[in-house]
Image (cartoon, rainbow, N blue to C red):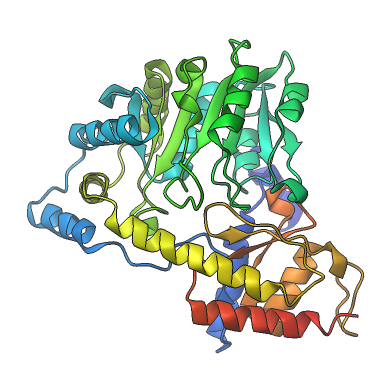
Length: 403
């Protein structure tokens, strides 16, 4: 089928939609691996730990107990109650089971919330660098993304002044992640209060806070913006089990929101997927009620790896770095290599550099364009110390050939 007939066949929303850059790079890395190439994959945002044993045991028991039938769309009541209790205990969010909708991953929870709030033409302020799927999700809702940029010199943090300038009569929501994917930026309680105080007087503006990396925070106490009294009734908190509990493939996320928004998310989900997997729900219940020992072990490992990567990358002075405060990513500025060549390949963009490093160094990374920062690349340090050492060695060797 030629391109003209495809455009006639497909909807415009699909034609306009970009493929996720992280998934695209992962596919290219797999193609090389299939040819026998030893590729070090630092592209996907996935913990390299196994799901803790007590969580797997709960899933096995659910299978043995034949817990294999449909559940209520927002999930079983025990799980929603447990999540609400967790949010009260850890995040100071006044939630009940009726405020929780469990979805097939935090990604679905996000699109549920965006579809529930955004009308065609509404503006959504997005803190950049941002996760690659935020803009396409807003696009699917026929909204308009308004980008507010953080700078590497400030750890990629957006300033309250820049947020204030971005608000217009068309603003419907503010969307951000903390810790951030791709930068690892974590907003402090004081910084979030400044945002809340700016948003609070605008009664028609809602906050969508993506907190999926909550448990991977290296400095200070974590704070949720929904805990502030002046915005608590207009904050949608999105979280899940994939990162903190090493449960990526289980696909369990959730939205915690004022009841009318939670009900809307429930309504949307009821027409798309209904409830997420019943077995995965039982596993998630064991996770949220089973203590934080495994979380702490993983967090300590990520912190050690962060420091290892920062130390190793010092040997590549043309790369501009900062210190991530959470998550498991480094998002350095690599623009110093733009215009350079090894005699065969000329680097014009961060995507060119990522493809060069994939083909020459056999290290899979993700370019920054899809994250709203075309001068950067994303390096995931959710990998073994040995893999990280070898990856940075290969990257340095390949970059040294660019003149």
